[in-house]
Image (cartoon, rainbow, N blue to C red; front, top):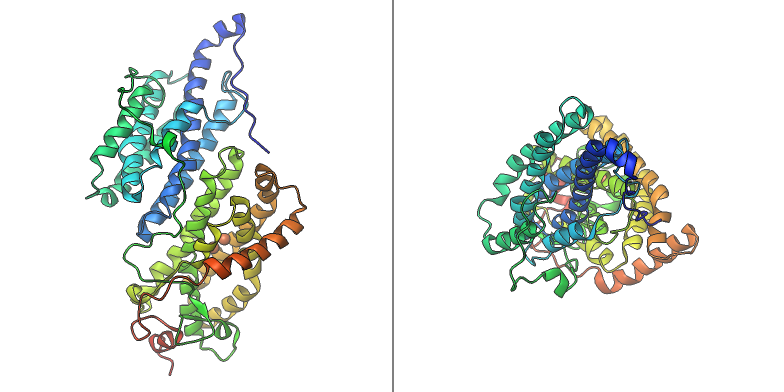
Length: 440
Ligand SMILES: [Fe+2]
Ligand SMILES: [Fe+2]
């Protein structure tokens, strides 16, 4: 379903006069809603282009909060005359945010979003508070005050990751584009674009990189195999009742941490679906944040259990293959194949980990399972809609089967292409996990 493109209805002569004060504030809320939803569509392209896991996690958290802002703005806006019934984003805002994704360097793009567009959004929320009536529009004010606190915190949380990025020319370019728009709300003077200004987004389309960025960390194709001297997760060991539960716990934390691949490939879907209903992007944003939390479960716990994260190679194969596929195919593989198929093994693993009386591990795994059940529900809810966005008319089951076959074929050409960064003696493997767990 394509989001309806109906602009706010023009006010009739009488009602326009009577409700003018409401309509003016609804107009600003509409712009804020479109800005937050457009931030979600475009800043998701940062996730797989920056390398530091902590930064990926933080971006996913901010994106989820932006999605919440957009949803509250839509709910409140619809209470007000003049917000409009559709959810589409006006071309001038889309152009600005589409421009922001263009730098080839992910760090430069990050600086553009967080040094230009996020500060402009904060300024817009402050403008709203000043422009509205504190008592008449109290319901909106409560929301906007909360969003200002979030935006101020986002700026503080991102600051350490922006230090040292050389992006002066790009920041000036985006500021020029923003000034021609008169700020996000159009409340400032519109400075015409200089004659030599060129929109990069008009010159070339944005393309997802063929592989995702993992910064300083070693990489490989997959962390799963049957060989305990090859990879940290040994498939047979997961289901083998003779495997020590401490080894199972380490393997499942590696598994959770590697959900970072889901973070990276799911993040590619937003930009590719500009006409998705907002609720689809909202649920995808929740899905994205959940996967980043699952990855953080492993990232935080493994060092406590004695694993040096610099010995753990990150698996890139799923991103590398899925980015060759269409967005609805990526989403189908994720929800209907990988997630729906993971429950039986994870159930076995959870039962084994419970032998250790490790309350924290049990809690993390319980929340992971609960989240994953929701992700499969999202898949059933949204896959037909995302298929429709791409003109896919086959029954869902037929489409999923065909997509699995295409994934298998593409894996032959695009899979298994990332060699181990580390030689076997330096790399975390199943046998090393046994040693770390103190199992002979
Ligand atoms: Fe997950
Ligand atoms: Fe999931």
